Length: 237
Image (cartoon, rainbow, N blue to C red; front, side):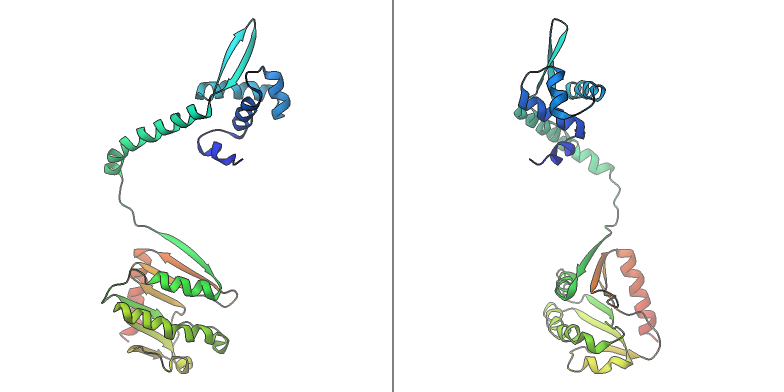
């Protein structure tokens, strides 16, 4: 049984234990619940009162003894749906109050396959005329990564198909890695620049593969604009 769902609908771990125990035992006093749940006496009674107040349990008194029973699971389902309906009715009002914020998140991709999937995801919303700016993929031993440079040849076909305008900056020392590549706007430099970074629309990818083949794609309009400005500060030199 997936007991985590009980926490998601607002029950504590102790409340969950007691509710399930009540389902098993039917109407019962506290004694059998103590044995079934393993909870301390004070915790059990305190939690039973909370379950009753939340509508997940009820009790009757016979003589001086309390007999507890669990609420029908179907009743709880109706209770949850009622809450959902009430919240949905508030949505228009809440949307009016909501202050727009920039979406910022990061995704992590592992290995060569993850790297390829990331780049296809990177341009999937591309349109004709969009700019793809890159500081070349480069690591200490470029010859160890011929699979990456060869993949970029196929990737260029995808960018071209979408009508994306590609501009790149790369170190002169890896000029041979760009032989046969269909990139018209490419500059080779002999001074230090950032590497392993690409910018497209409101996204930035990083491929720092020195230690592990882990790549990152970040959704951030602010970060993308910052790298775009840096790219052109180098490009215009």
